[in-house]
Length: 102
Image (tube, rainbow, N blue to C red; front, side, top):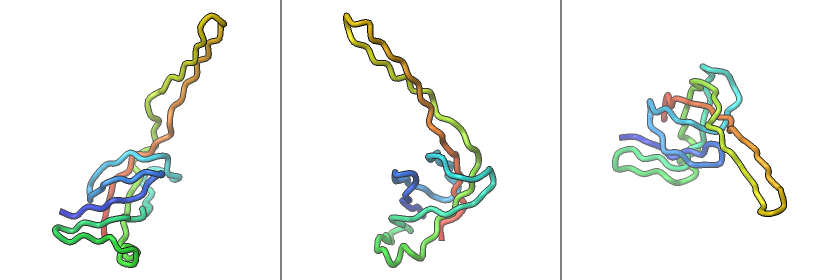
């Protein structure tokens, strides 16, 4: 089994070919391909972690769709003062499909 650990949106994700992964918003339209930087590559029993060897590794992904995450409600309240504040937030996400690890 071949898989890689890649850096995506400030986080690290474990990916293999054919996986669907949800990342922070990546610029581009559906169908656009891009590359992700690999931090670790596992090919069966062989583990590659040296920076000069990982420079040769390319992990390609294709954008499936742009979407928004679930709404997060932020509420602040202070007792006896009448202070209430309500705020919402939805993160911008992109669903990508890993097309190749070479």
